[in-house]
Image (tube, rainbow, N blue to C red):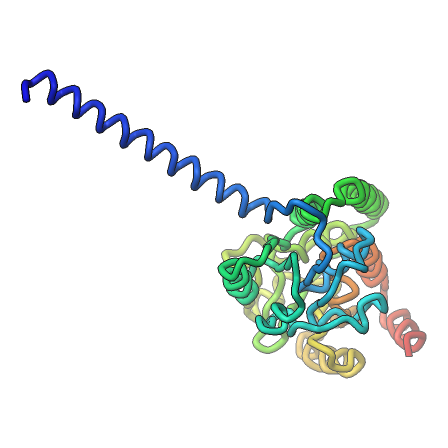
Amino acid sequence: MNKDLKTYFLILIAGIALVAAAALIYQFRTHKESAKDGPQLKKKPERIVSLAPNITDILLTLELQKQIVAVSSDTENSPLVKNIKKVGSFWKPNLETIIASKPDLIITLDFEQQKQIAKSLTRLGYPVLCLKLEKIDHLFSAIEKIGKVTKQQKNASEMISNLQTRLDALESRFASEEKVKVLWVVQQEPLRVAGTDTFINEVIKLAGGNNVIGPTIQQYPSISTEQIWASKPEVIIQSAMGNLDIKKQQESAEKFWSKWENIPAVKNNRIFVIDANEVLRLGPELPRGVRIINKNLRIKNTNENQNIRRRRK
């Protein structure tokens, strides 16, 4: 084979390799984009499984209750899904029960326990929409994606617009109020608090408060006694743990914080244990949660706090 012919074949082989590589890159990107946007369904799903309460809330607001065939066992707030099959908890979904529901769409959240279930279901050929839902912007994106995959784009668009309008109105309304220094506790022992790179921080701001925790490496850092003294919170809010009695958790919190009696929040009895399902569910009822937090931030003193507690009983 002469030199020119060898060169020709080398160029031809290199060209074929480049075309093949480009095709693989295109296929990878297309697959990645498809996974990002969710499954491409040809028709509206008729059997939907929701693995999180806030996903169920979105589906119900989009008027898809007839399509929901199973939900996580933590979904307790709506009579519309009270008697629907449960497929394990938010933290521990049950693969076999999900499959037994014969879904044509499963919607999960993007965190470790549910991602593993999502991968298993995808390998088995089930259409799965896995959503990142950690910030308010993620909520709008999640609604849009759910609307697209369920063929409810118009309802989803209206829902996003309505939600944005309500949140903007609350932010504008509370912006004129005096800012309150807030310490939000997510775990009492060992003590962990909400940092600034969290959904909780977004809610604090919307409700008219300032998070006393500055920038941190962790989203939910542990803090020292010195940091507690230095932060001087005017209000301490604790997320209620599980389904335990909130009144007892309130009493426990007051006892725990009594050792810091000179902190403004403790001195004025402005310590509140709040049901996380009411204020921290990142879904359609977010504006209601913001209003509840704002009301707690405006309670000024011990007597007012005690009067409100008596009315709650």
